[in-house]
Image 1: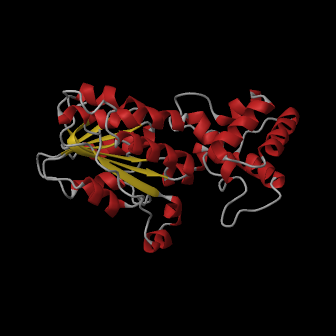
Image 2: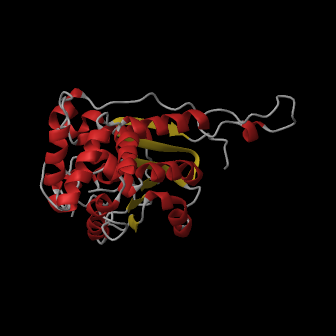
Image 3: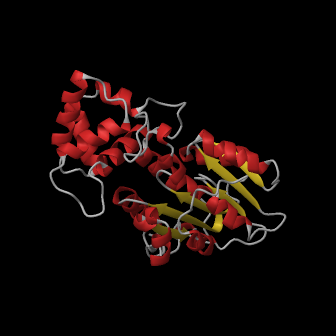
Length: 314
């Protein structure tokens, strides 16, 4: 059974962008709690299939429970940087009608204090998408140099008070280890002299640490070309991002993929060999005011989608 506690973002827009038919093969590469998958299944017939992918074992456990009664659903536990490997193994490379990526942390992850993602709930300072992989944030903070910490806060959190926060973290850990989200949130709150409207002072620090510990931008850079490779000609890729670091990467990737290969115009090359990888990408879409009112976490979402060129074989 799917959890009713999670509200997927921009579901109607995702379905419209993917435009599934009854026999579509779709990939939800960030299954979460299955909100987008559930909406997409309404448009599939008996021969349609959805491959649900997530690196979070809790999400995959929920998906597997659902798959026991749904033969059209296949569950894959892996980071989406392994998309090509997994879909090649499944035998559907180049046959996928549509792929959706809903980036970042999910509401269930934020709401579970034990996962350590939220500055609003006190819990272990962890933040790993897959708790069986890598090290928790508290272990990394215990040994990182002040300069490296400043770099992460600036680069991944765009935090203007990075030096002040990093120094406070290093000073605090010299007295006693930082082990909870509440401790870190309180420390950052005391360091930030100005407030951004509607944003908690620890937002940027928590974002930076989460992005770093999960290598989320590297994951995104890895999956974008793979996703186009896995699509059939005319297939569609839909991506929802939640901050400028992600969205800039998606925008730039789509812009580059929409350019023709730079061959001299007089070369005897067939049109399909010089056509762009994708057709012109969509304009960025934002959630409706009604959705933001119902689900405030949707307010920063940006959806972009693109269609693989119908004549393009990668």
